[in-house]
Amino acid sequence: MMIRLNRRKTLALMGGAATAAALGTPAIAMNKKVKVGALRFTSHSGSFIAFERGYFKDAGLDVEFEFFQAAQPMAVAIASGDIDYAVTAVSGGLISLAQKGAIKVIGGALSEEKGIDGQKFLASDAAYQAGVKTPKDLDGKKFAVTQSGSSFHYMGSKMANAEGIELSFTPLQKVGTIIGAMKSGQVDGWSIVPHIAKPLAKSGAVHIIGNVSDYLPNYQVTTVFTSANNAKDERDLTQGFLDGFSRGVDDYAAAMIDKSGGDDGVNEMVDLIHKYVYVDRPREKAAPSIINGTMRLNKGAALNLSSIEDQLNWFKSEDLVDQDITIDTLVDQSYVKMVS
Image (cartoon, rainbow, N blue to C red; front, side, top):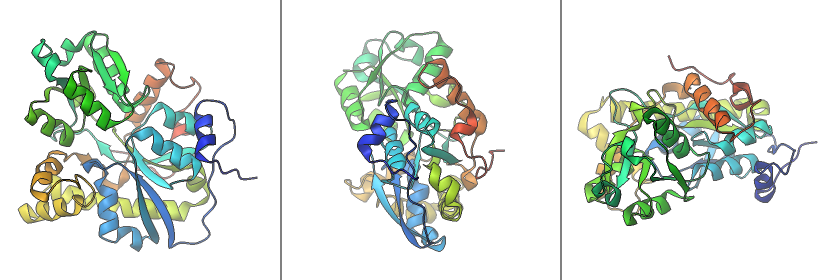
């Protein structure tokens, strides 16, 4: 019998209280409405472009977006059936839901790439004035994360291990809350995508003190994922989503990284993305931040499996997930194209 969990039950599952998998209802036809989870980040542009340019519709999908403020709630929403597909970072919650048979990673999205400006390590102005000029100087300081077991936790921990320092990880749940805490000096350090890091640094509220890529080259920052039910039983629907998403990614890379359309192509893409990112700002103020957020989105939703394995091993080493979880528990490799 197929079980569909509500959000409350799924949260219980994540805490280990439930043992059943949260699987959605099978699709009976194409051209059905599907909900796609997203953050209002430039790094989610592949989905926005695919929607605006009709690529999802071409693939037989009627897409509706649902927006979130952190990665882990999207994993909950996929497992509970509130949304169908999403792009998010690997987290402890995501892995735990995969172990319960609720979700599967089916592709890759944002990644660090040499030569392309990427995520930054930041120091609050208060910490910077007190002598925090490099990531190593964060020794013993408060490092902001959304939740324990989030991608922020992973990035901070890998940097700390490389530098031989200790960090006091401080969970603040939402990116907006972290920004406020950095501005007020309640926390000392953080890591975040460039379209958030650079405007904050320009304002003087924080200071850029390092690059995530210096510690995690070729880091697979975000992945494409869905429910285990969609991955197994709705293959046409799932492949359709990946096809539409991949076309959006290709357009993004052509315009923003390769600049094949010149300045006109960049401006056209900024106009499109601005419908979803920095919507509370006028276009002229939003454009620099959108451009600053340009990072590599993997062609064809390819996945850097080595990076995912490293992340999984880190979660195990920190006892944030069970030791017996394998890469196949997390990733449905039948969909995955490998990053070359």
